[in-house]
Length: 206
Ligand SMILES: [Zn+2]
Image (cartoon, rainbow, N blue to C red; front, top):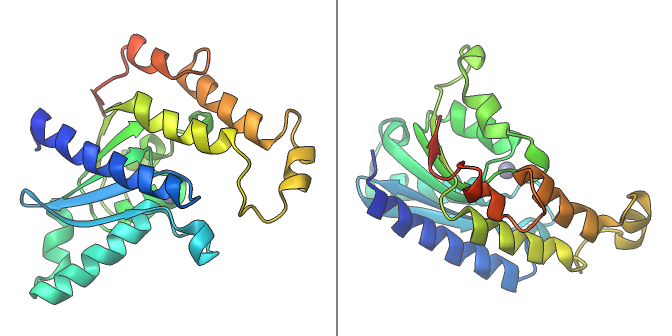
């Protein structure tokens, strides 16, 4: 299990990757994977660049980890069960499912998934016990800056969105504002993310 200093160090790295994603016009989520105290894989969201909606930060990092295993001659089946994954936003249901199937034991994340989907919480539980291994979560590390990047992104118009006009019309309050305000409701508060700490969710484990 990582100690607090280590957790914060790798979450800083994940935040840097999320900032890099924002600068490239991608959804600002960053991810770092750590094996035996060494960051061996990383990634940020590349959905716009790849025009592939599944290329989330976690998937990019997993791909890099598998390449690293081949390069250094390690068996991925021995590496994956002792890897720690740090990601700025709670994994979506696709990524949480994949991480479970890969037997990754520990996921550390910053802010909750938009809209309070609680994907990681849902996927790690025992009722999915016929598939993969349940993982441990540490939630709320630097939740505020992690969420702030997402709010900044969704507060702007995504220049790479396939049909921004249609999306904006299709939502009751418009895409940008609606998604940005959803971050607030995910935190159960006014929308600036501060409630996440105030409500005592910081550094929870489940
Ligand atoms: Zn995902």
